[in-house]
Image (cartoon, rainbow, N blue to C red; front, side):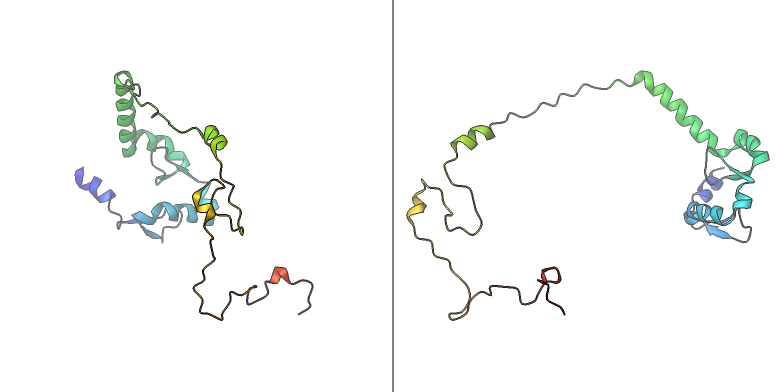
Length: 167
């Protein structure tokens, strides 16, 4: 029994496709192949039923009830159901003891106490009005060599900023 169980888990084991007997598929690819081959062979697919315990089991519709009663995978699911019902009475969820950490922040208060001017891109006022750094003259420094300047526009025209010019 154990050897057949280990053998069924081998991902390289070749399995025969239920839709086309000429197809030998590796076990690891079998679920994907079933979906693909089912679409390619709708006439055969209508004659087969899928096992409720293992979707890899494609059985003729006339034999599905017999398969369900004797399917090896049924015992695994039944055991899971038994274990879950046993654990239902024993499981009591512990009440959480987590508490929210204390918060020292008060954003509304900070907003009213804020004396500096808001940041505006392109303005020279980097410091607040009441800041001692406000008296310091800030001069823009550039890493460019003397005599060079930063370009005022992009080196190319963007297609959506064509300005109506014909090309």
